[in-house]
Image (cartoon, rainbow over the protein chains, first blue to last red):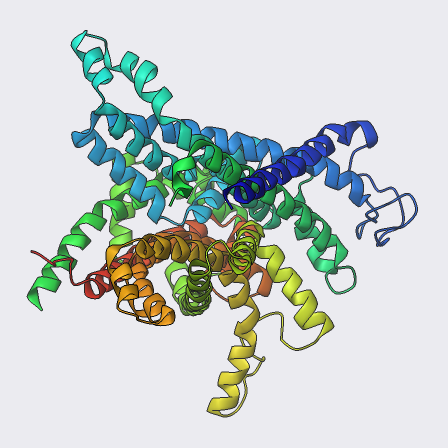
Length: 275
Length: 326
């Protein structure tokens, strides 16, 4: 029974890795297969998928959907990884400081975390992107700055646990400075759950980016899956493939990172499934 | 109940700083935004000389130091004055007040759908843990988690509005309304169906996961074994002994998810032209109406804070172990 389970789990991780590898290949090959600008009008408009030369058809302006899909993969990956990286950095910093020092520092930082958890973060992200002008940088910033609380809570709990260990007391008695203790002892021992959370965060960041660009707040100079769905929406009645195809890609990318996260979770925290 | 009142007061006191920081955030965003009130007015009027703009700035005293401006901003907020939307020719507060009920209804219905369906599915999943039914439900919940909300909405429109022609795809009711109480209610329900379903989709999977893991935790407790030993039926154990005790964390989750529910509502309202706050926010984004957007941000933050307060209250009432001390 256990063996079947571990095979099942390995399978879901494998599935995730395969999906992600495919998306990476798509992103990397975009410029090789379709060196032209994906915004170029290349054929008759509204060609359905399967048309000769245009496997995914063309949109309502006659732009090649396949080229757009491949180029957009890069944006989703860049934004997803970038935003998750930013929020992991922020969340780890805040979590480790508040878990290690405790006391009023912890109180203040936890209030800040609660604040970011209570407020409607998507609306905040929209505001930031509108005010900073839509660009990849501002989108990464807006998503990163609104999604760190989950990480900081995780890291805080871990840091509080590690803080109690004897080797930390030993380091303190040896007169080692706090920053060095945090860097050498606390951080390396608190990062395991972060790796899992980061994978889920990338998935969420891809979803948020898609929603932003669906609302017309994507970087106007690059094509993204969300903006393709947003554009295809007007032709929903006659050509639903324009929304279905890029939406399916978002779905697949998110599934890939979720499966990866689940697989990593089972690898890194085997305890959770013992019961 | 004086104890309850005191408890609520204490929670309010804790939430007050949060509200203040949100106000500060929104003020800073306002200052960060390119252009000020005078720029907007000049833009709307179509022509304005630099001298006239400088005169206007003097007139509105916009050159005052930052803390004076912030004080004025706070004062305005205290009078429920969120500024003026030049695009809509209306007070921002008034615009928002018109839209709040639609959004609240949508969110409430979506949460109820998600909670009822999600808790049932999660309970079934926990009961048949490790079997194929559990696998199917878990996979479905992963799918629900990974599907973009707007995409679900659009696909539902394609299937139910365009192909099957069962349900309307935009708006809140038939234009002009329907006569009679029941026909009108039915009409509203028909318009509500697709938006509420798409909004609940994502939260459904959260509820499934949370119910499943909370119930599995309770299943491991001693009193469940005792109940089994007494010969109580599995269904009765699942519903009365396990589910009941697993429900409490779900109340907390509901509170924590309210902020993101508001975000989902923006997207869903845009897809279905639902006349709520989210649709208003989308229009404000489109017109780059920062004043309106900030007003919506403030209002929805306060709404979320208030709803969190209600959730706390509910929690305290549901769990007799939590003492409402003064």
